[in-house]
Image (cartoon, rainbow, N blue to C red; front, top):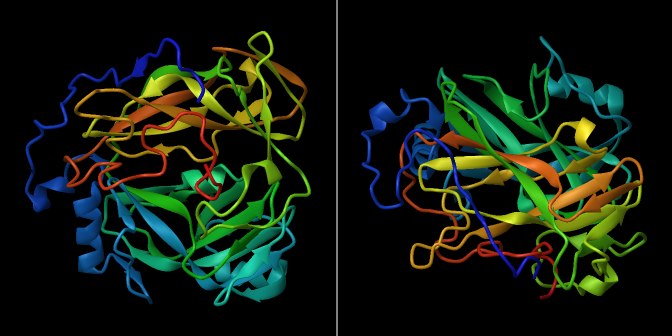
Length: 364
């Protein structure tokens, strides 16, 4: 594990900080009128009302404390280029112009690294006025270097769902380092729904920890296929090279993919959700953290109060000498409309109390 020395806590610097046990429940009809991220019970209410639908039954664990996992539908298209539909155009109307061939995901199919695919999501939206959404890859998706972005009809930006949007959802999937096996029902990203325009507060910079016995992992090229629905099935040495720290520095090679850990511990209170965002390129020509959502309760231990490391997915555009403690990302908090009925990690989680940790697909 990285960073077993001095540890610091990252907490939101917001005007009203609420402890895990002292948030009053608001009536359901009041929740949507308060700007903020919708908690699990509000998402479940949207499903019950028909604002979120699917042709197949929802999975029992699909709704997270402050987000909804999206599932792949049965059909994928290999496309020759990424695209946005743009104002006035539907995604389906653009597919014929970019599709190379169609894949049936019912029994599973391999998505090859270096290729771009488009898949219609199983879920559809008919959001109420004033409710919008934003998508982000799940932690396990980002940690195996699969680039995933959400598209909507008439969309002019990836990952954003306009207020009151009604229509289908699509995923652009681009495996970067490993080829992956997916099937209908595979969950690669998650949707965070919000009412109004809640304030976003940048709390702190996030540094990188290069002090552990293992400084990080570098992905091996020409490795095998990763089945994204199988857990603890692969030997990490077949896919990753462990990196030893040298004088508190790590030289990033251009185009290589790294898994590192944050210097700080992160703990997300019950009435907050957080997103890790990249730093300004002027601070370093590298990209960090493709999967950036932190649900309420991440890193929180009510008995002991210790946080969890943030795992950093890093790719450099130029040779770059990274130093221990160097700022690589920022943590941005948004309030919830009310306390979620359940918190992250309740009932177990792959990434609660994590240190430097690979995705759930690899054996410990």
